[in-house]
Length: 200
Image (cartoon, rainbow, N blue to C red):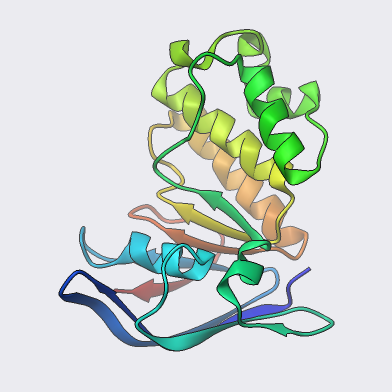
């Protein structure tokens, strides 16, 4: 597990533009942080830097576990469960086959109960190309759960979901924090977790 994630004087540059500078915060186990800001403010870029997909222009990111401190971006990435805009689904695979692929990637088991949990039992044998945007999002949630990673980085977690789907996301986030996980979410909507917020 991860006990905290500390960001110190972080900066991010995309092209010739400095998106943010001198950004510092800390999130502890069991906490959620909502990253707010207008479109183009750098919310998604911040998540990508935290995940290790982008190198920071300046500053440091430290993930602390019970045993040690982790600063290397690639190593930190092994702690990350990612929910982004792009679902990365193979259109020809069925929902269950796709979940099995992700489970194998994470060294986990793809259980039918997991599809039931995200409301996709009836679509288990349906090729992913036939899924609606909301169903694709639900499958992305199943992938997040099967990853079993302690640090969730969520980009607009409520996007493309109906009311029932949004309630499901809220429940999953509350469960993750209740089990000692950490959530950092770029969002225009309240997370409903009594969380802190960060303005970009």
